[in-house]
Image 1 (spheres, rainbow, N blue to C red):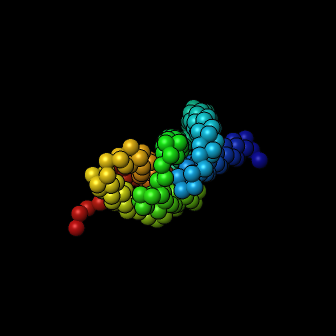
Image 2 (image 1 turned 90 degrees about the vertical axis):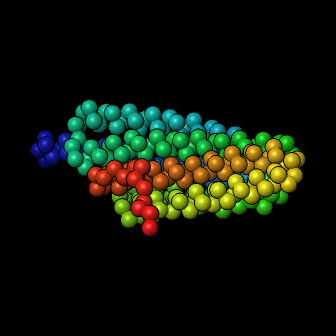
Image 3 (image 1 turned 180 degrees about the vertical axis):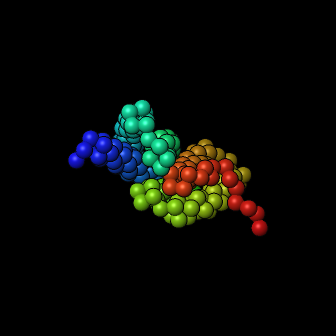
Length: 229
């Protein structure tokens, strides 16, 4: 193997390692979100501390990946698709870190509800269904990134609007609760904040999917609205 081939092989290994770290970070965010929703359903608020601790690890991983991206750009001076991959990864990890922050908000909101002696399940609100839909978007967006699958990425982008619609429905139900019984206001507001955090997790998954399209096709589709029919 000559020097040029050796350097190329090293570069491929660095890019592969970078992608692996992104998927590792994504897996941690998935676990965080899932744990927060499980706590909402079960009332096992002991997991909140571990969710908050996991958020610190996600933050550290984001910094490490950002450093690796900067190092690769400075040292390797990648072009074309390789440069798009590195730039896309730097944006993807920002969205994953923010999704982790939203998971932490969910966990803390759950703790406040149960510590106040309330049971969110009594409200009959479809938080768990909303969360499972958003979590599925996170999984699919990471799968799209792992396989650089544009079709799957576009499916995630389209499906995010369903999460937004469901979120609005939950808000309407909670407003009705508050109007009918003012005693529910405090808990309803906490559930609204949890629902909003879940909806934002869906948004971050959509952003990851948009970066997959950018990495593969070089198209920046952020902020482009679907044409109305």
